[in-house]
Amino acid sequence: MTLTSSLSGSLISGQAEVQVAPRILPTRQDGRIDLLGLSRDQIRQALKEAGLEEKQAKLRTKQLWHWMYNRGAVEFEVMTDIAKTMRPWLAERFVISRPEVVTAQISVDGTRKWLLKTDDGHDYEMVFIPDADRGTLCVSSQIGCTLNCRFCNTGTMKLVRNLSVGEIVGQIMLARDSLGEWPSKPEGRLLTNVVMMGMGEPLYNFDNVRDALKLVMDGDGIALSRRRITLSTAGVVPLMARAGEEMGVNLAVSLHAVTKTVRDEIVPINKKYGIEELLAACAAYPGVNNARRITFEYVMLKDKNDSEEDAHELVRLLRYYRLPAKVNLIPFNAWPESPYECSPAERIARFSDIIFEAGISAPVRRTRGQDIMAACGQLKSAAERQPRSYVQDPSNS
Ligand code: SAH
Image 1 (cartoon, rainbow, N blue to C red):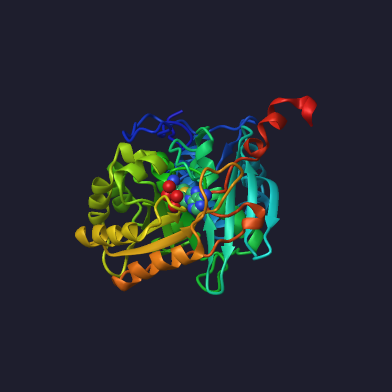
Image 2: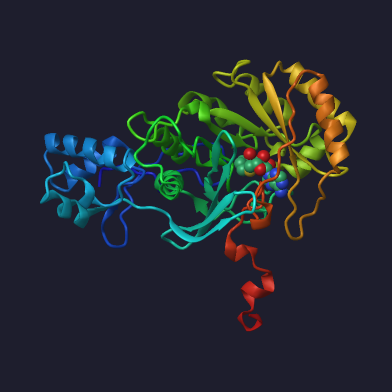
């Protein structure tokens, strides 16, 4: 095969060096090729390899693309502008997949969480957060994570693997299926924003995340503006500039601490790329200005990072690096056996006031979907969420 794909050849370790290895198109167990997640070129190439001539392949690619990303089609039979005889021919060779849904839960506050399963049997999660004026889908980039942030439940899992382009874009497709948002239209959408803030570190799955977001932004398909997409990183400094250049989406940075000692402890990637280096990379992020500010996420951990001095130091740092910034204060969401407590409400309010008084926006984020374990940092695979004795000892069930 000469085709390149999204599944292999991508960065899986916690290393920043991006390996560009030849990538082979994923063929499913039934021998068919999944078209979801492929670029136009890859689709055309796949059609040619299946026997179509260049001109035909080009035309069919255009049609398939429109059906998939504008109409949300998952079957070839509905593609009325494709010759009737050609539809079964396509169905024999190709599929248009969606992630398998294991469970779908809805919170008392309207937040929805889906537990999804990959073809090779791994769980991952996505969350939809409806608000009065917008709807945000929180998308996962990896199964598990390499970062081990101490307050994050996903961080207690090992990295299993990167999600493929199809598995990433598949989350948005599935959410739109369930919200009834096909065909794509510019106005009146429920799903208006995408945040790469689910399980995993998106910059450690750079190529697949970029290619998936390109599909989401493509003007002939879902056509979500890059201004409505936010990528959140714990601070993979060497890849931040590239993210700005190649994706152009909004940047959120999980800062969470203003001293080396504390950040080393709670966000261990800090030992590799320290606070100064990180903030300098933020200042250099392509396209940053006062109209497009960087979001700094700051989880409020009692007696760990929530003092008045911390708030003043945060202001000093943001000023020193001249960062067009907004700060999102996230009340810590506890999970079973989590080693920290959430700061008291008054302390969070004081922290927020200090930053506001310096002229920087610092809203306290409302926790959503806590009753269904859908809140920030609570995402984890279902298997891993069981108590150990339950997982390891079948006689215990
Ligand atoms: N790896 C990326 C994206 C995933 S985490 C990153 O680190 O930014 C998305 C956000 O949720 C991050 O800001 C993360 O620090 C935060 N988070 C993780 N666990 C949390 C918890 N238990 N309570 C509140 N926020 C949490």
